Each structure stands twice: as C-alpha cells, then as structure tokens.
Image (tube, rainbow, N blue to C red; front, side):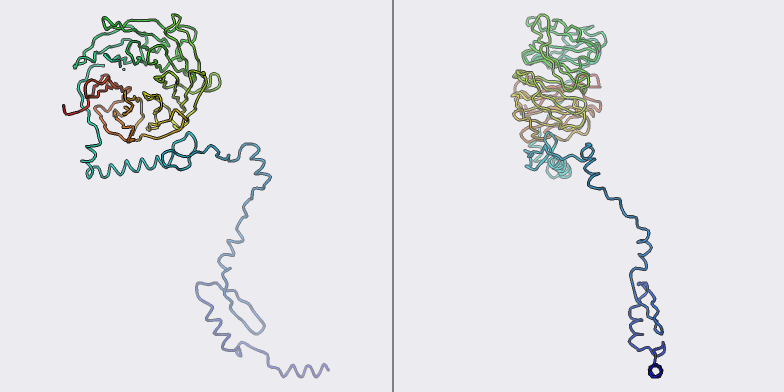
Length: 443
C-alpha cells in the first residue's frame, strides 16, 4: 500500500514558480500600486504579493497610548466635592428679543445686535445723513466758565476746599458766591435737592456738611454737619439727597449704604443697608434716591447694583448685569426705571416693577462716569472719561446728540431747568471748567 501511494505521488506534477498560471501574475501586478504597502506571503512553490493598509499605520498603532477614562465614581466624587460644573437654573426670557438669557445678566444676542446696528449705521452714515439729521438733536455751547444744579444756580466743587455757586438765570452764568474753607482736605462729592433748597457736600476728611439756601438773598450758608462715630475717612463717599432735601444717602468703603434724616436737629442715621457680610462688602461708588422716596439704589466696584425698599428697610433687588465697576446710578422721574453705568461702557436700564433688565444703551468707548434723566424722562444724559457727552432717546434707545469739546475726563453732567423752548445741560471735568449747552431750536 505504501509503495502504491509513493508511485502515485511521484506521477503528480507539483506547482513551481515557472508553472504559475497567468491569472496569478495578473492579480499580483494589478493590486500592487505604489501608494499601497504590501505584505509578502510565501507558500511552498508560490510567492504572492497581497496589498494592505496596515503598513503605514502599524507603527502609530503600536505607539498609541489609551486615554485615561474618568470613572463614574470619580465624577461623582468631584461633583459631591463641589468641583464639577454647576447647572444654570436662573434663566428667563429677554424682554428685548424674546430669547432665553441668564437672569439679571445682559442679553448677549441684544448686545451683539446693537453693536452690529451701530456699525451698520456708521458705515452708511453718509448715505443716511438726511434721515439722521431729522432724528438727531443739536446742542450749542453757550458759555464756559472757570471751574452740579438747582433751579437758579449751579454748585461746583473741584476737589479744592472752596465751593462755587454760579447763577443760571443770567446768560453769562456769572460767579455769584464762593464758600471758602468748606472742607479742609477738599470736596469730592456734592449733591442738591430737586427743589433747590438744600445741598450736601462730602470731603476727603470724612465730614459731610449741609447747606441751605436763603430765599431772600439767594446765598448759601452752612446748615449743620453729619457727626458721630460713624463719620470718618472712608465712611462716606458718594452722597444723594431726596427730592425735598429731607433725607441724605451715602455709601461706604465696605459696601454699606447709610440714610440720614437731616431735618432732625441731631441729624440721626435712620437706616443702614448691608450688601455683604460685615466689613466685606464691595466699595460703594454711586447712590441715588428715587423721587417718590420709596427706593434707594447703589452701584459698587464689583459691578453689582442693589435696590432697597425704604418702607420695609430691606433689599428689594440685587442686579448683577454689569461685570465692572458701576460709577453712576439714577432713577427716572417717575421712579419706574433705573439706569446704571460704569466701566463697562454700557448704560443698563432696569424695570423697577420686577427688577428686570429691559435694555442697553451702547455707544461710549470709555468709562461712563455720570448719567442724569431729563425732567420728562424722555432723554438721558451721560458723560465719559474720553470727554464725550451724549444725549439718549429712551423711546428709540438711540443716541441723538454727541459733543466732545474736550478730550479730558468728564466727572459730571446735569440737566438744567428748562427755560422757554430750549433744553440746557452743563458738564464739568478734568479741564477745570463748567460748560453749558443749549438745544439748537433755530429760534
């Protein structure tokens, strides 16, 4: 049996390289392009080249390092430790565009849209000039005097120890009175009541002095001083008087807001609002009292805006819409809106009914240092560090007038009582002068 098998195997022809069929050679040549690497496989008597893509990536596969996957227990541990990302739950609808935004924050969509509109208007200003002239308001510089307002006078303090009073009933705005040695170290803030009968000034030494108007002579005289252990350097910064001059509000360096009853003979402090833990609040940079006497607002260095209810003595709203220092806050004449501005270069408008952010006024390219509402609430006045003063239309949410008489910083801008058909305002700043502007009505 073995011999028969051997003889049969000896008759069978074994394949060799020379006897390889033609289709095998064609297969090898057709699938052997230059771009593909090859892998040689040797079979006894037959040698074939088989293409593959693993040649080039084989080294990278060997060198690849698997990523460390964070386990579920590790994620849970970080979440319980307070290091994980927190869900944003404080969301609301933007009253401007209707999109979802974070509560008490500026709407990014409205901000981008306003910036786009501003650029678009600038690009087509030459084409739209006739339309813009009809929509804008023109103001003329009427007078400038050396070296903020009452119905008949303007009180100014330029950091010196002397207060100046200018008569606004005369077109030349003459210097009517000077009060020397009002503050030994100089005065940094001054405020007047809307009725024009009471004024308050704060000095660098921490003292707060009150001034009263003599109706017969029209001159101002000292009417007392805020005293007590609480009055010291750093305890009083910004000041604001109520409409009738009965109450005085001031901010402190640790974020507190004090309210004083200045009609009382003792000038007692009747309210103290806290904006943080004791001694750790943010510096109070601005303050204002509503005309109806219901609210007190303050702006702080950390960008926060607080509104307090004077009837209950508690905080009403905490508005964090501005992320940079707030240098000015102002209530509208009807006490229905609050305007806040500062280093962000944006004027934010808030609704007092719900404390909701209702709009922005954009256009300043520098820090905004002062804002003031007109008596009708139709226009808003603002001044900035680059010396520009702007008049804003609240109805159109647009700037209707811009003036830049100086390139130095403006510290304050105030509307003057309207006489006749023309509106007037005055500005004061680092150029050590007061500038008066009158609306160009053509009359």
